[in-house]
View 1 (tube, rainbow over the protein chains, first blue to last red):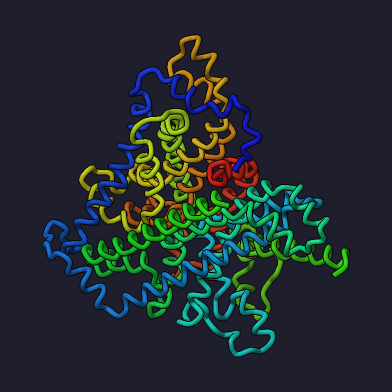
View 2: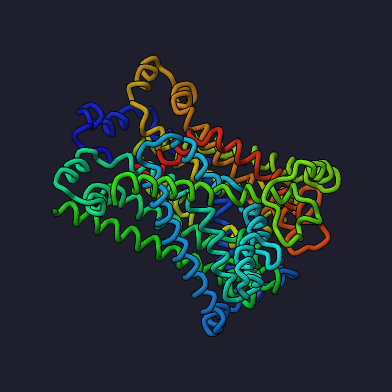
Length: 315
Length: 275
């Protein structure tokens, strides 16, 4: 996002010169080959096997006896009402994670952007949740959310509210909010750190000009801050969406998808199918559905950014 | 709102933010230093009780935590070393060369972000079974590296993009090979980012749970994440022992992170914010 004017002519000519530096045309291929082979072996090939598996009926107990059944796993998935519940939980989980992690992250970034004493320390402390291992986070939050002895319930208990004796993770209505709260606590520092870096690009001149024009804080944000950080926000949306769709550890350890499926996202359902029901074929089909959703989100993101770039070019 | 009120509001908000970020970790420490009797008292104990420090010695003695931490450290360091070794050359190639298939490589790196670990664990289990990689820390390292290497490559590419070509040209004129240039000139220049990338890969290995839980079955090869998770829902281990394990597992990572966070943040944002 560097402004064009700061590029010296020398630097602008860079790609051509980089290309001329090449010795053998094969060099780049030698350089990327190990990683490509490694990823094809450990991501590509397993993915292919998972795809094949999704067209079969295979048990974890007897994986050798695999029967090809075509699309039946997918048909059965779509027919099951609880599968749509899983999709809904996944959707809510992802959406709330994205919205909350980005808005809290932005709020924190704006608070920590302007100089004050101890800012360095404050910036470091805010990133602590992100550095803590997810399983440790799940463990401590499960304890804090404990019905009788959890610290979260203590103030409610003091106020003598009935809700004070509620076990959050055992209650179908409270479990998902509790899981969301934990997840957001853990991930919002990531967006705040990335947004803090993006805020460095906000032009002081535009900010000051807006100030002189008598713009209030909201307008300064609209004119000077938002246009600069918007690409970063979009990118964060994409990454947090994909990460939320993938999220397993925290949810599994805190609730295993329960109670009565209240926190069962696609990956939790996938894992339960594979390792509890031991139906590898069905699990694979669920995985493919999840992957398709991630792909669609990514394509929409690229389509939207392309459109935005074009619109900006026209202006 | 006048200036000093808004200043006060800001300070309150910042303190609230910091409190919310730090409190769960603090509470883990307090709980680990609370006597069994006080754990279930009507009023929670708000400050750590130093007289309970023996709980840590007992925890080390009576649980597998030391073995788990060792395993986690092996996995984390292995993931870190392998990721860096694999990522340097492709990062350089993606930054400096134009070649047919470059977009494809970039897409491959990006696409791995979309694959859930929980989905690949089934086929990986089968593949590892055939290669005798099941139930080994080496297998875990390989599986983790498959998820860190794309990110690390991307971060390093971002750093190499910022290195002026002039730095390399002199060596080129002197007849150095590409590999020499990367190893003796580019790597030292991007050393801070390399350090940041190492830390990110290390943390991934240290924190990872899905693979550690499924690809390893021996008790003595458990990592700390699996060991700690095994206590949830189990009633026989006292909560202050579980929290002590949590602290032993979390605190070194967090302190290490705080020491290097400046570099990590710089490295991470170099890769992700430049658009």
